[in-house]
Amino acid sequence: MEMQARTSLRIAVCDDSPIFLNKTKTYIETWSANTGHAVQIFTYDNGDALIEAHKDCHMDIIFLDIIMPLLNGMDTARELRQHDRAVQIIFLTSSPEFALESYDVKASGYLLKGVSMDGLTNAIRTVYSGQAMIN
Image 1 (cartoon, rainbow, N blue to C red):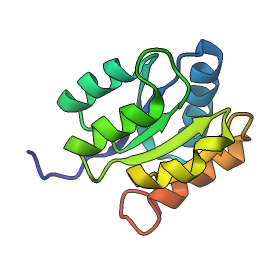
Image 2: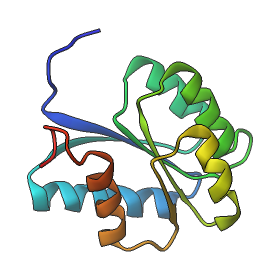
Image 3: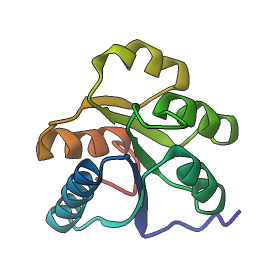
Image 4: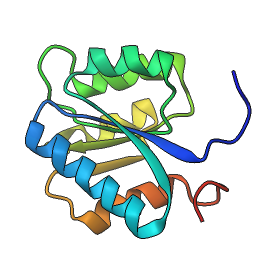
């Protein structure tokens, strides 16, 4: 694995709703433009695709919906954790009832859909506070 510092954050967004997928992507792009932090954004509409992609292209942050057909977000997070203990997983979901369970997969955040641009970008800042990549 290459140990050189990357100049951009790799952020994945996984949601089966195209509306929320695009809204989250737009928020991240706006945050990137406003702060000057370069990002690469990868979007997935199901957990299996995210897991496969993450094996080849390590993500720094993953925004993950919980309620999805086939493999739900919580099971996706469990699978990701088997191979990567460091990736920052932030759940972005319409369901508050999984908040406690999110601790089991060491989630870095739990946001409810409808979150504002500020709420989402604060989550990005929080997971990387203290790291050289984002000041």
